[in-house]
Amino acid sequence: MSLTALDPVAALRDAGLRVTDSRVAVIGALLAHPHASADAVFSAVAPTLARASRQSVYNALSDFVDAGLVRRIEPAGQPMLFELRVDDNHHHLICSRCGAVQDVDCAVGTAPCLHPSDDHGFQVTSAEVTYWGVCGACAAPPSS
Image: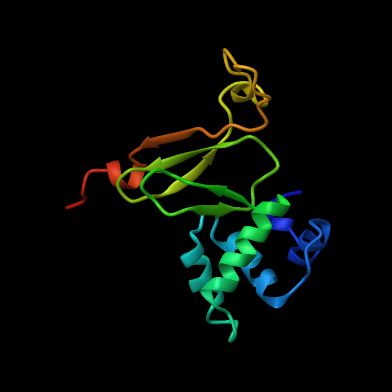
């Protein structure tokens, strides 16, 4: 299912989670702001939920990660970020200047990163690759 067609209520039910206004709002914030920090999610839901608290947002995000509804990424030197794209083995491009984050599919095949040259006896279930660089906006020469 496309993320743009994601029904927050159905997604919560399918994940076995109780449907609350707060949880629906958190999913809505992640739909509008992919790769959002917990604080950014709170800032997005606070104006519409009178009883929203940072703790309720943190709890919802944690529950969502545990249920497989949300993926948490932890870029070095940055706060944790959360996204709804969990159904594939994609990676991320992160701008080292402005912090912009973009999804990027695996370069070859459906999940080549799940097959390391030596697994040392591990059963690999997921892989995280982060590409660091400078985004186009930051790399562009200043306009005069």
